[in-house]
Image 1 (cartoon, rainbow, N blue to C red):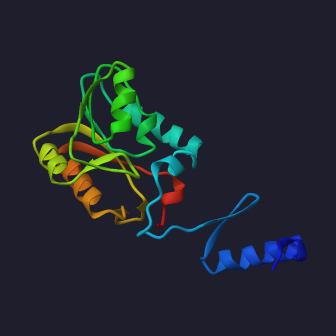
Image 2: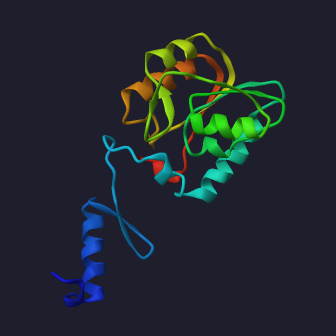
Image 3: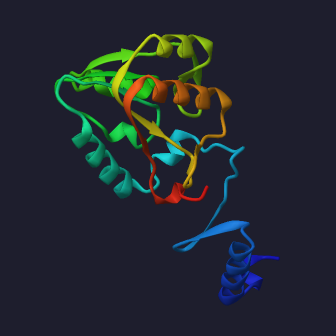
Length: 182
């Protein structure tokens, strides 16, 4: 069917019906596909979503960091917005490391296999390096959050997150409202 042969009200009705069936998500001016847990969205796409909410989360998170802390920042788009004073930051994100160094923040980068979609170091090398470190606080991203769990579609990233949390005195999951119930 050509769009010119379909009325605007029919398109809206069809989109509403597809949204009610959970096949897409309605957004202002149209719709977007719903990604399942097996389909991870690249950081380049995530970075442009919910920017104001992420800025608020980052501001809150920055207030949790004290001078002298050793902080782990995971390769998430919310963490990209964090910066602070006299701290040491450990990250598994190439992207974050470059920005932190540019800001003059003492930075340590975790090595390993780089996951293209998130620029995160993952795998056994990254895991072994993280196991040897302790953090005053850690900031972790998530693809989904509910009352009992936070999720990621990548098993290697899940192991990294779990190990960081185990080695941190305090760990915080940074997730905007779009992640709730996913």
